[in-house]
Image (cartoon, rainbow, N blue to C red; front, side, top):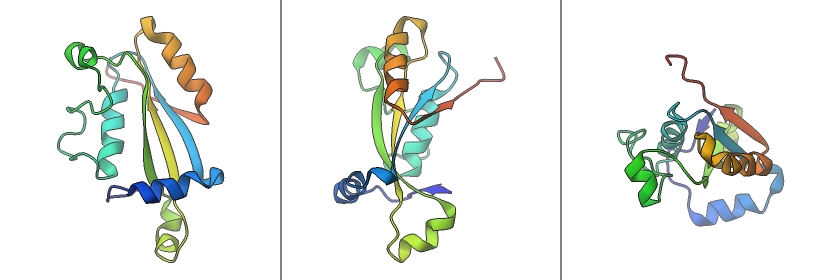
Length: 134
C-alpha cells in the first residue's frame, strides 16, 4: 500500500469525497510527545504536500502560534490524503479510484482530552502511536 507521491488536486479530492464508500476518517492518537504529529507529517510528506526532509520537524498540522511555540498539539486538525492500496496501484492507472483518508491529528495532553474524544467520535478508526523507548 502507498500514499500518492503527487499532491492530489482539489478536483481529485472532490471526486473522492463524492463516493462515501471510498472515504475513511482516521484519528492519530497517543500520549503527549509520542510522535502523533511527526507521524502525521510523514503521511503528509508521502502525499507530496511537504518535503520528506521536513517531516517530523515542520509540525504541519500545528497551525496555531501557541502550538508551534509550546511544541504540542492543543486543537485537533485534519487533512485529506489520497491513498492507493498496493493491489489497486495498477488498477488506478486503468481508472480505479483510490481512497480518501481524512487524517485527524489529535492532542496528547490530558488537558485537551475533549478534543481527542471528539476526534474519535468522528472517526472510522484510529492509529494508536506508542513510544516504546519511553
